[in-house]
Structures are given as structure tokens and as C-alpha cells.
Amino acid sequence: MSDLKVGVIGTGFIGPAHIEALRRIGIEVVAVAGPRIDGVAEKARAMHVGKYYETAEALIADPEVDVVHITSPNFVHHAQAKAALLAGKHVVCEKPLAMSSAESIELVKIAAEKKLVNAVNFNIRFYPISHQARAMVRAGEIGDVYIVQGSYLQDWLLLPTDWNWRLEPQYSGEMRAVADIGSHWLDLTTFITGLKVEAVMADFKTFLPKRKKPTRPVETFTGKLQTALEYEEQPINTEDYATVLLRYTSGARGVMTVSQVSAGRKNRLYYEISGSKSSIVWDGERPNELWIGHRERANEHLLKDPSLLVPEARQYASYPGGHNEGFPDTFKQLYTAIYRYIGAGDFTVAPDFPTFEDGHLALRVGEAVLRSAREDRWVRVSEISE
Image (spheres, rainbow, N blue to C red):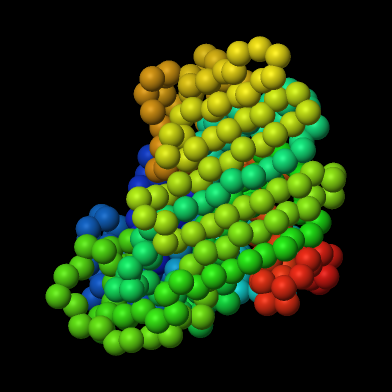
């Protein structure tokens, strides 16, 4: 697809997911960077990457690297993305784009000034069914959108002994469940409906105000697999759960619930979008299916099949009907769009993937949610500076 070469910053849970997806579309990963030279060397060997660096700065300075993928903890995203842009590199960054909207708008401006391709890794958009749902809404098949509701539930932080750096605000930010998974739900439903959130009313709850932090590092999602660890008790100041009421500029209404303490839910993003003609429902644990609800005739159950999808969705379905495509495939399809765009070379064309502007909007909405939870009131997104 391209002769561009990529460097990936971060070797935890999501870094290898980027590398795997890039290789599937023929993009060469030439370097990785991680915080400990012994650890990153081991990861580089395991992933068959030729070069490794202990710092992001060293990777960004590598003249062989054309595109930088940032998969490091949240608190360094802004600095690393800024450094990569100033070095003339295209950037793909995990969400959140930065720790604040003040930081993210700076990145939007630098990327525009430098005329560099920029993307935020909202990969959930790239299930074929996500594009099918978007096309249906845009074509008026469900009518005017009335209600957008749903949830994103996980259980990986259910127990007091479950631990991850996302529990520490200095690394992750002042919100956790909303920023980590709620941002995906909000981005996906915004992408599908085209609606803009006008105001929010949020309720947060931390069910585990104290947790047991292991005395040695634990990688994301692996805490529940650890045994015989030594712990130290730590206070928790970010939310395990949140429900957010949503008002959209169109007059539509919505509600989102997020939780990282819902037993049995491993990674379930769910939405139901109700319109004046029909409804659509999607469950991320059954990602190849779309339920379509009607009043005057039988409901429909659409299975992912390229021959049944609209062209906008068909391009992101790589396998025939009956051959399921899942979470790793969304990374592949997102990067297909990004590197196709870079290869085309006309950056005046509107990108068909989430950009830094989308990441900035997500942070503004998130800051409105946080303010609402703290002040116990409706907060307009316009109260958060552009």
C-alpha cells in the first residue's frame, strides 16, 4: 500500500495491536519505543521489529520513520504528538489526544500549519456495521433521530486488587471510565448520527474508593491473571461508573452509561438509535449484526455480508458473509483509510477517518461531562473554550 515506514511509541496492550494491523496492510514498522530499555528490547524481539529506543524523542528523531503511532499513557500524548509534528512526521495518536482541550487545540493548529496527516485511533468506527448504520441514518432510512442511548461496560477493574496506570490521574487524567471508554461511545454515536452534543448532565460514582496497587508494574487487562503479588493500598479519585444525559443541537436526546466494574461484561459497547421511522441497535459483543426495528412491519436482522452492505460499508468488509470480522480488523480498516489518504497526497480533501479535530471535540465534551459531575448541573459544551 505504501513505502512509508512507521515508528510506534508504546509497547503495552495497544502498541502491538497497531503493529499487527499495520503489517496486515503491508506497512513496515521499523522501530518501537518504550520506557525501559530491557523491556522494549524484549518486546521488539518478540514483535520482530529491528530497532528499539528507550525514549520517544529518539524514535521521532530517526530519519527512517515517516509516521509516528503514539500508544503510550495519556499524559505524554500531547508532548509526543507535538514533537512528531514539529519533526515533520505524520501522526496517529491513541485517545485521548491530550490531557486537556487547551493542549489538543494546539495540536490541531500545528498539524494544519505543517500540512501533516493526523488521526486519532477511534477504531470502533471501522466495523463494517458502523459504516452501514451511518449510511442508513444519512440516507434518512430511520427518519429524524429522536433518541440515542446505550452503554459501554467492562469488568476488568471490578476487584480491589485490579490495577492499571489508568487509575492514577497523573498518568490518565481526571476522568477514567468516561475518558477511556465513554469517549469511544460518544465518538461512534456522533459519527453515525452526525449529531452534535449541546449539553450534558453527568452522575459519577467510585464504588472502590481504595484499591490495592501491586508493587511491580502490571500491563493493561492482565491484572486479573496475576497471583501472589504484593500490594500497597491507594486512594482512588476517578469514576468507576458514569451515566450522562445528553442534549443534542438537533433537539434529540440521549443517555450513555459507562462502567469498568460490570461483572461479565468484557468489552461491551451497545447503542440504540431511535428515529421517526425506524430504530437501529448494535451490540459490540456481536459486532457483525445490526438489528433494525420497525413499527408497521417485521423487524430486520442484518448480518455483515459485503453483498448486502452499502458501498460505504462494503469497502471495510474484507471477508464474505458468515466470516466474522472483529476488534483487530477495525485497526486494519482504520489504517487502510489513513495510509490510502497519505498515499493519495491531496491533503485538501476531507479525511475519511477521525482526525485531531475529532480528538479535540471529544476532549471538549469530556470536560463538559467532568464539570457537570463536579457541579451537579447541566453544562453546555459551549462553556468549554474552543
